[in-house]
Amino acid sequence: MIERSFVMMKPDAVSRRLMGQVLSRFEDKGLKIVAMKLRQIDEDLAKEHYGEHSEKPFFNGLVEYITSAPSLTMVIEGDDAISVIRKMVGATNPKEADMGTIRGDFGMDTGRNIIHASDAPESAKREIALFFDKEEICDYSMSDNAWIYE
Ligand code: IDP
Image (cartoon, rainbow, N blue to C red; front, side, top):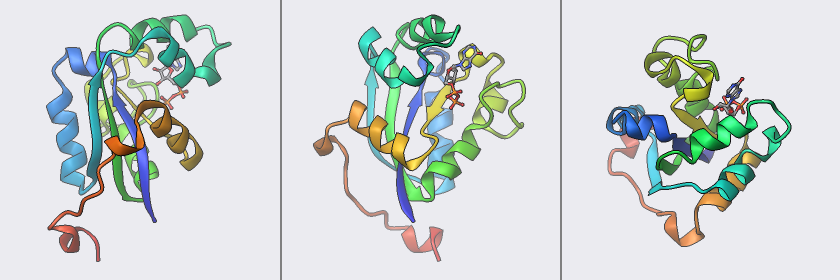
């Protein structure tokens, strides 16, 4: 099933100039970028996005991290995109993430883990609506589609 996921390169990815490399992985995989915006996330938005963690001891540090520099926010589309992208992203703790995943290859600390990706269809829907207006999401087809999907 064609799905859309909300994906965000966090401030460490942007500040370490990793955006191009990480974006290439999604393009190489055959996924489609349908929205993209470099954005300085403010405290309110960070708190809303990570609301489910508000009681956790790492919450304040997480908000500080996410608001510390711009993030690259994206909507990425493809067949089973949510689970495929989670697999590409890897485990939350980059030290435990498999090599070959984005976190496994580029990160060291859970508090600097490079990238966010929606973990389920409901959260994807909520996060996309939180970060993008409907008209910012592009509807277009790729000419190589028949070479990516059977
Ligand atoms: P996920 O990003 O892999 O879905 P979640 O458990 O939903 O992981 O946590 C959201 C984010 O909160 C993580 O990506 C990470 O940035 C941060 N985080 C989670 N646990 C810790 C921790 O123990 N210390 C610092 N930051 C954490």
